[in-house]
Each structure stands twice: as C-alpha cells, then as structure tokens.
Amino acid sequence: MPAPLDTPRKATATKADKELLFKGVTLALIGLVILLAPYVARSSSVRDLMNQAALVGWFALVLGIAFGVQYGLRRAKAGRHQP
Image 1 (cartoon, rainbow, N blue to C red):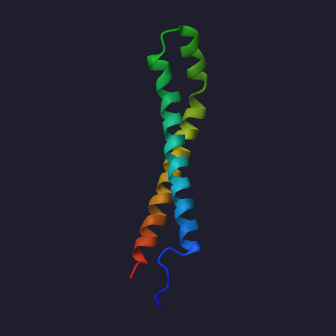
Image 2: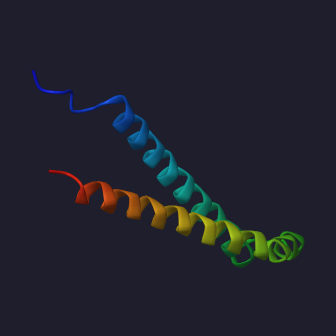
C-alpha cells in the first residue's frame, strides 16, 4: 500500500509557506501604500504625516520583499527534492 502523498509534515510546511507568502505580499503592499501616499494625498497635513512615516514604509517594503524571497527559496528547495 503506497504512503499518502500529503503527509502531516508536508501539509504543515505547505501551510507555513502560504502564510509566509501572504505576510510578504501584505507587508509589501503596506509599504507601497505608505511610500506612495504623500504623492496622492490632497491634504497638506496628511502629506506631511505620510512623509514622516517614510522610514516605516521602506521597512515594510523591504521586509515584505525578504519574505517573498524566502518563500521563493523554500519553493525552489522543495521542487528540487521532488522525485
């Protein structure tokens, strides 16, 4: 009798990979919104506030990209070990 294809360990790893991708995309979008907000805002007070948050935007964008790269590396590593 063959072993089941989707073992609990594999299912857990797949779920963790999907969560990592979700976090990466979410953080990257938050970073982009924060960085682009000063150019779209109509109110000068909102523009000033979002300009002050630029460091947070860059941090979120870089962290989101790093999570995306980590997801890609995990997928490449998992794909390499498939028979």
